Length: 249
Image (cartoon, rainbow, N blue to C red):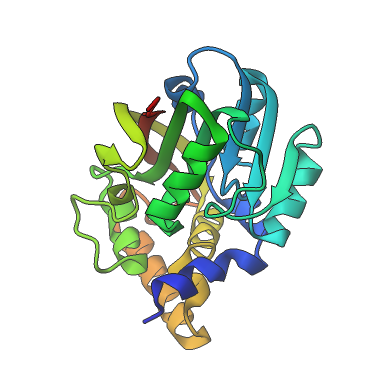
């Protein structure tokens, strides 16, 4: 079983695949964090810019920080107006008090929480906004939850291990509100399977284990009446958004 650090490093070699197969985020998620335009926003752990692209119309200046060179290359090509910087959450390459808001999409659970919170607080203005968000499977969708258990067998049906990284209290921050946004996308079966191949547990697995996991995904899709025999289906998704304010003190 790969450890947390190995799983985190598994993303370093992918970029185009992640951008092509991973879902984006609904506009409502960005609205929940930034209901009004701000001067400067940082997307931290930005990946290929799946959430960064929603920030471009919501800020005068958008910066993105990401440790994976492969992902950063995709982001730069896709969003040339964004200030894209190599770096991590525990050492953000931006000056003190330079950001009005910081967003972290699908990445906060990989960070060293206390070190990252200290750095995020440093680059934010007093009272600045921190928004954490994750896409996860809709608990009412049996076939997607079953596939989710293939990738994350330790996670129960009514929980998501990633969103547990968010808490009512984060060091240096005051919790503001949480939003849960339900939406859906139409996806081809092949793309749905390839999406799982961009998930850390698949990336870190050896070839035999990965092949066995894919076989199990196919078995689930062949057996469920909502997906059996279909080349395309509607996938429900839930986006959890957690919003905080930097402690002015």
